[in-house]
Amino acid sequence: MNKRHYVHRGTEPFYDPMTHLYDYQGEGAPAITECREYFEKRTFFQLDRFHAAWEIKEILKGNPRYKAVRKKLVQYDEGGVITELTSVAGRLETKGKKNI
Image (cartoon, rainbow, N blue to C red; front, side, top):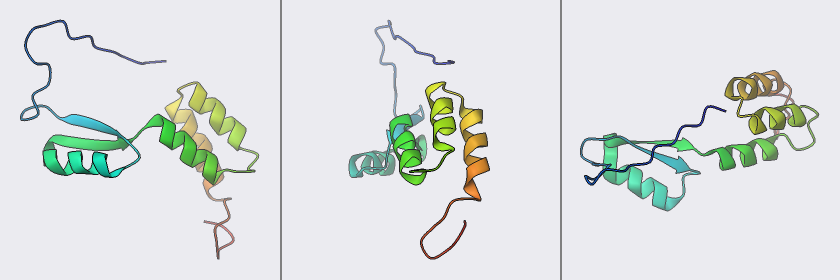
């Protein structure tokens, strides 16, 4: 795992919304969207890991490749997740279409 954490020990404010970029993580709920709109170009949004895993589970229900994708998620193997999803993408059935 390549997680990094920062513990701010100084007395000065760590985050200045006028100069720093802010990373919002979530699923796009109204509060997240409001923050993104308020800070405009000083922020970016990304789907958080919990909601990404939930969406993948919903899409791959019953698919035999789901366990492989889930394993890569648990291992924090981003490249492996993308590889597994790419291998499954052309085989997924959608409403009204046989494959995507």
